[in-house]
Image (cartoon, rainbow, N blue to C red):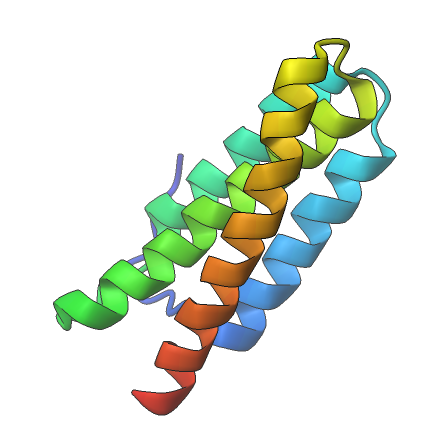
Length: 112
């Protein structure tokens, strides 16, 4: 993996990357492969993220990315999974972590 110390992940760039990863995950075929590709894409994004030096902002940005990865995986489980228990858990994760992403976005917006 190539790391670029000059790369700054802006909210717009992050949103575009997350949207692309989500669209890719939804358009691929097999559920397990979708999850793997989504996780790999998200991990690359987190590794490329340049820390701001502000622990709160860095936490909010990284948790937002982490939650988005969980959402992508949960959506694949709901779509392709067979276990009613895991599908219910994934549905709950989608609801809960979407709310947390909204809270993180709000905090980031208020603390630019």
